[in-house]
Image (tube, rainbow over all chains, first blue to last red):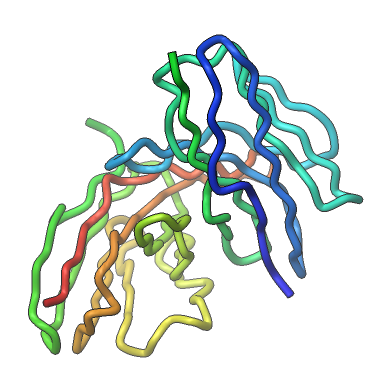
Length: 108
Length: 116
């Protein structure tokens, strides 16, 4: 079948590091993207992995292992403004399929 | 503002009525996507266009839903005979197709539909 699995909630404190995992099953795979969405806002693009390995963009990094159908988003030096929902999304030949999202709460 | 815009931002309608939403993508983007999002869920793919061609439509999408992008610029999404289950946020996104990029999609603010 086709599915994306990610934890529903994660809580961490300011300054900490958080890893949000995503596992997927898909019939056709081009790459894995990560999006951030604040309450009441639109999703915004964070990163994309088309090949295995680590992509780093500032405080955010994303990793992909295609053989394991697994990826993760790493958020470092957490800030209060990072409190949001984070979605992994599989890019397939004809669509983009999103997970249900991980709600990250950053506490002081 | 050169981002993706959607109109209206909110729509309240009665069950059985037809509604139409508009999306204006970023001007140089050739791909346009429609998604539906309900509370606590990720965006659900509905359909997408490359220029004016509708290349894919979700198999889960009812025949009551239709989308157009007649000149390869703005797009409309129409829902006929609305049902209460259609209540959701309807998101539009655009991107520029490039093999070397992650097909980063830029989302609009969405149209929140409430069917009474």
